[in-house]
Structure formats: C-alpha cells, structure tokens
Image 1 (cartoon, helix red, strand yellow):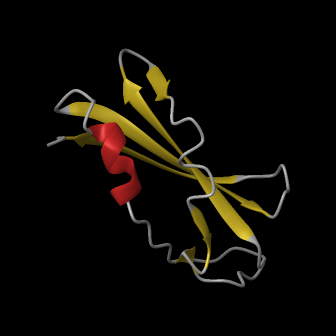
Image 2 (tube, helix red, strand yellow):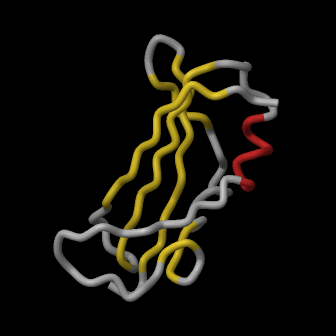
Length: 95
C-alpha cells in the first residue's frame, strides 16, 4: 500500500454521537509521507502513525469545555471505497 490517504471526522457526545460538520477541510489530512510511513505491507502488523491535531484547533474553539469527543480517522488506499478506521474517544478540555 503506497497511496494511503485519510480523512478525519469529529463528533461531540450529546446523549448520542453528533458528527460535527467540517465542510471537507479535514479530508485528506493524512497521507503517505505526512504522518504515515509508506509503503505499508499487507497483513497484520503494528503501525506507527503520527497525527498533528493542530488543524482541529479551529473546531475545538467553539465546543463546550469538558465534553466527551470522538475523533475518527478513516484511511483508504487511493480511491478505494474500502476503509480502515482508528477511533479515539476522550473527555477533552478545550481552551
């Protein structure tokens, strides 16, 4: 796999997960050479992925303080419809 890209979705817990609109600004945020070491061999393995959360800062400024958040990273190879996901759920404190 040498053409990985990734999109990011953010959600806020309000009794259920409510996805926050990002208007496409967080699409393609991750890619080979920018947080993902490529090529990635097929099969089960441990991957090290570096994620810069700075692009999420403009969205967190408008969110309630001390609220549960979910950040979902969706990875795909090229234009493939198949995706792999990494989900982080946390109780965050925004500044």
